[in-house]
Length: 170
Image (tube, rainbow, N blue to C red; front, side, top):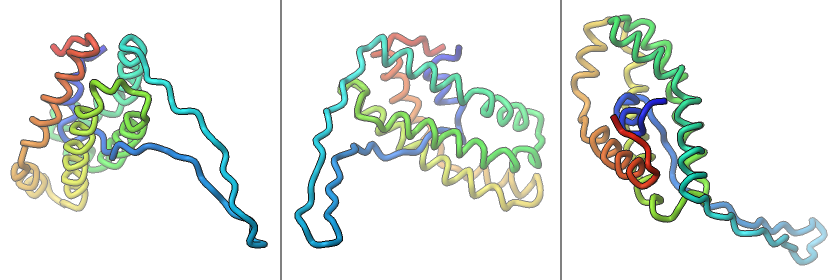
């Protein structure tokens, strides 16, 4: 298992995007113009710390194979392969972010989850810009211009989440 902070940092150009959104009840009227009816829903139950830790580690480990391929291709300097893996990385991030956007996470980490989602979303948008590059030099130049503050912000928030959940970050 990788630590949360390492996961976030490693996901450098990979990680999640999501706006924390809460679901609600839908009211739908009949076409005949009768009054709308609504079905009450139960408020979601907040996860305990152990449940949140297990859920987070499961989510992180499900994305790890894609991130490992991406990281290996980058370390090998195989930019052609990096370009082809970017859509899969972004898709993994979106799946991860969707899971983080549920209201069941503990309130104590909700703000940091939002920071992680927002900053990693910025990183994904930037990463998608590398897909149309056609040469290794062009891609290297593009990647070198990235403002890495989003990675730093998401890593710091990830470390706070890890501390709260009791997940090692090294």
